[in-house]
Image 1 (cartoon, helix red, strand yellow):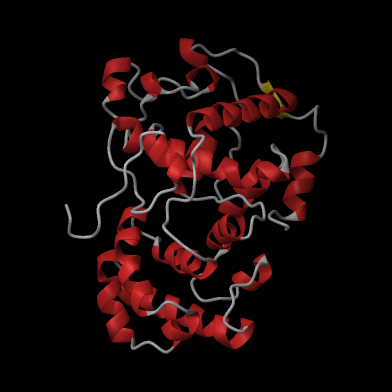
Image 2 (cartoon, rainbow, N blue to C red):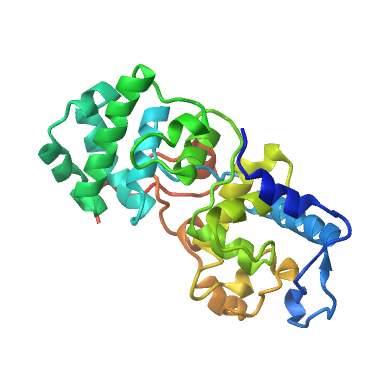
Length: 292
């Protein structure tokens, strides 16, 4: 699967080992090393961060409940501008009534809107999920395609959604550049890019292709639990020595601990039906809609 533009790849890979990144590493001391980080050092630091996060989140997984590619595709489209928790609380009713693309393609839009109302933007999302269902029926015999170029032709499906589906329903590596991923890779000085496609291209050059899907989970999970947007829990961060942005958030360990979310803070997760590995690690299921 091609997940980055050739021009961007050429720019990043030319002169590898010679090109330097505009980054200095503070670590826990908060002091700048004073020298720009070489390309080789950046790759080593990025891969070490991913290894560390793999140990912190060995149970990392997509935080949307799904049983098949169609459910994951619909759930990912619905997750725009809302939380995975809200989607997971809403989709059981949707899939109980419309379990297949054929069912949803033939659905009454007003009935679907009522089901999707808790997700926000329910009218636009209704158009998208009915539209993509019709596309699956008319173009792909009711099956979710396993190719990027096919997925992005469906209504409401962009590259981010396509990579979620490809990586987690088909086992095909891809980088999911959501808001958490964008924030953290820039905070860690892995890239200075701001455009999602360019971020995807830049980060793809730092890691083997086989790492891309799990890397996405590790980064997103860390962003949701510890490395928050407004107040990162620096004092409770396991990769603080590797982070050039250490000190932007709360550094006191006890105060930082109170900022942790989901299983790291002793709270329920986002999935109503999480994997057993998550439960074995002390994670708790999310409550159904209306349960508090």
